[in-house]
Image 1 (cartoon, rainbow, N blue to C red):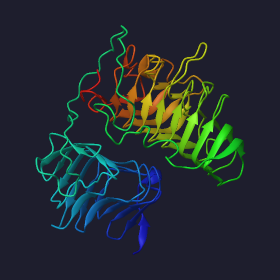
Image 2: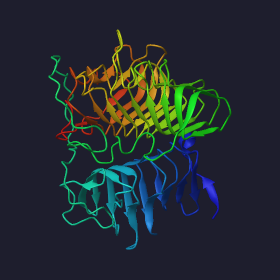
Image 3: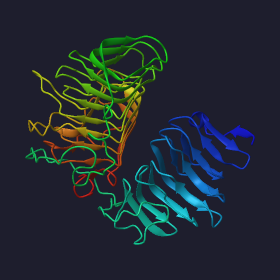
Image 4: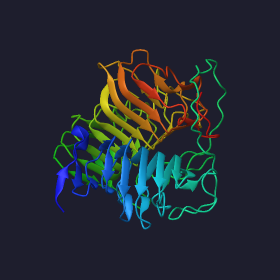
Length: 433
């Protein structure tokens, strides 16, 4: 079938529209905003967003997320199924927020292997709320056709906005959190990152290696036990299924913010020495475990941390520990991670899950922080007074209570959007105040 380019400007790169109006997304990070689509939408890339749109289709699957495509988000969108055979959204690995499905045979389809998060949405007029593949109490009493029939219920996130109040400046007494990651504690979905689904996969045989300097474009490093640090001087390098133990400033140093480094299923031991586990941009961390570090990843230009687990930070003399930090940068994504600033062994909340400021550069722009579990910090989200920001969004996150002062400092800072109704405490699913 002949294809033409969808008129979405820069965001439309990688989107093809057939004569029928159908859309196939092949470029990671594509945003479809404010469109009327008379056809299907096929998602074949990571981190695709569909919002403020209407989709009408009479075939089998109105929106299909293909296997291997992660991070799909559909929000404030209406899907009209025009035939009795037509399904709504299939087959999992997506988040749907305020999505209306009308006339669809099956609504939100997913499975244990490919879960979904569904918030404040409807299927043929029935409320549907699903938390990581588990149907919440406000969902229909009968299993939604094509969805996981798991009977376990979890509290439903409220959609009622609440006014942001200033956190109590008095320190709270830390309470030991549940075991981290993998949904092992109350309120933490089973799909969240932890020991079972991050780092080197169980059973992987590792070959001993010293520190590495990677200077060949497209080079793939896999199955290594690296005793030393890694410097990346080339584009499109891949490091996967490996362990890095580095006793210097950076376990991974990327020389170019356009390097497009992928680090996947890697365990990083900062040996109590890393001032920043990964520095400083041009990378994607996916299913990475990071521990025993002073600071976690430094988020510069073009950096992404996805499906990863950061835990057990380590104090050094005069340290000001952050699980993640950005002091300048653009195009930053932090999605679906378990981020533990609080160390349950030492009872130390450290400084922040994420610290944001404009200390080393002019601004922080286009930063998306969503679907994370965060616990600890003086403030869990430390927003500095010097922040010059724009396009900074916090939404759909869960927070623990092992902070000193509050969840977020300066939530009304210019350039920052904090969604009261979707940033919730993990234990009771009530909005953070």
